[in-house]
Length: 333
Ligand SMILES: *Cc1c(COP(=O)(O)O)cnc(C)c1O
Image (cartoon, rainbow, N blue to C red; front, side):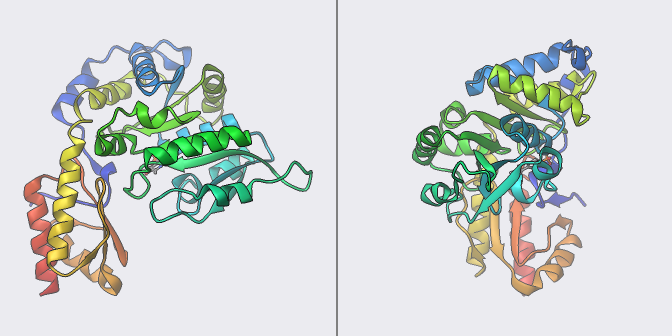
């Protein structure tokens, strides 16, 4: 039985071409700055996204952490969404390791943060308060793409308020592919951007932080400090380069499959949220665990949540979508 795993786009297996690229990678010691493949990946993404420099790191969590710590000192504060990865899903790292205070705010339905509410949360220059330094956004946010106009407004707003602007772009390319623009049209509004290679792009490991020379210089020091300095990391960077060459445009297929899954489930009477990229959110109510077990018997791996998230990716083909819809139909009875 072949497995259909819809829990996340992190479950993707390296393709044959990617494995070959990893095998053939030219290597050196990246802590000495001597891994040619890592250097190529960093230079390429920096150039492509419009930044002066970039840094390859093992995970998106580390990439965001280094970004926040490079922008903020102890006792500084970042403003962030309640549901944002950089607030909710990173073990409190910015606070624990960076002594940076988060100021979480409720998010809007489209995944943005209302800039009037952000403005109201900025602390005055007063020794009672942490120093508000940074606004962190996420794109895509639970599969939703932030509008380009909003990004331009957030850029102008943060410039006006003297704040830095960071993007958790774990799924940046899902956003750019959906909008039909170069990723740079999104990233040009930010001071720093973190991109994951290990989600829909299909690499086994790796994220890249992009920013100015000064910011990335700081982040490089911090990366060593938190234990993220890797040696012959080109074997991993090669997977990232391969993904950028071969597995970006195909994200449209994941988006089409997600659309198709959503449509099929709606036909069965399920309540499904509008789909923009590769995530389908469906209300399954209190039968979530039962549904998970039912589907597992049919080789379909799901999470168990009343608001169930299903994620399409390169190991879920169009035929698999039909099987998933059939399983939901059978479950419904
Ligand atoms: C996955 C993800 C990250 C980083 O995750 P790692 O598992 O640490 O690589 C960051 N932000 C978002 C929105 C993510 O989905």
